[in-house]
Amino acid sequence: PPSAGIALLPLDWAFFLDPRSILAARVAGAIPPEDALEDEVWRCLVASELGVSPAQLSLSGPVPTAAAATEDRRARRRLRISTWRRVFYDLDVACQRSVLRSTHDDYKYFPAQRGERAQAPLDIAFDWDAAGKTTKCFLTGPIGDDRCVVATEPLPAFCSATALPRAVGPSDPPSDWKWEVAYRAVGYY
Image 1 (tube, rainbow, N blue to C red):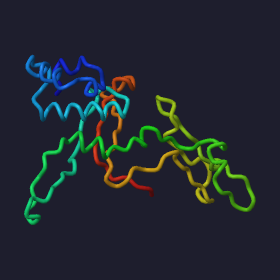
Image 2 (image 1 turned 120 degrees about the vertical axis):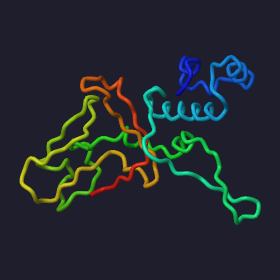
Image 3 (image 1 turned 90 degrees about the horizontal axis):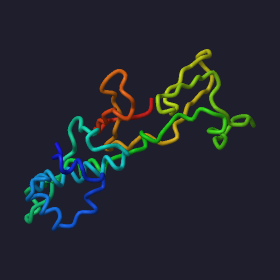
Image 4 (image 1 turned 45 degrees about the horizontal axis):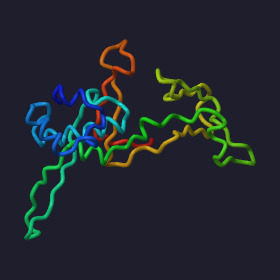
């Protein structure tokens, strides 16, 4: 966990501190040792990318590790790479930006069949979340026909880190939610 000193600094504090300031803050006990400092810097960058506070982030599940060849190229050794650094480089924020396309305007550039104009799928009702994003859809008509609901962003690549919000309490506002970062397998069905 970050020390109280780090929590008081701006979110992108790592870009504003020079080595002398970091050393002075470390000696004063305001920042943790080097490995923890590196993790906290990358964690702050992940939080900045998501637009949330670092205190709202938690890592869920395993993170891929890296190995490098030694001088003889046969033996392998583990490199110490910050977990949050790996997450930062693998982070795909499309899930945070993506919504379901729900209006006829959203589909106007899609191809249409039989000379018709492309439009939102028929007999589909859309629902919005607390933030006003279209995140759910329901079939309201008979099963059949040729319907396809499309999101505005593609799903993350196979080995991507994604962040999903989670309410801590049943009546917590979105600003108090925690964000779980994990490597999740996602796909279309």
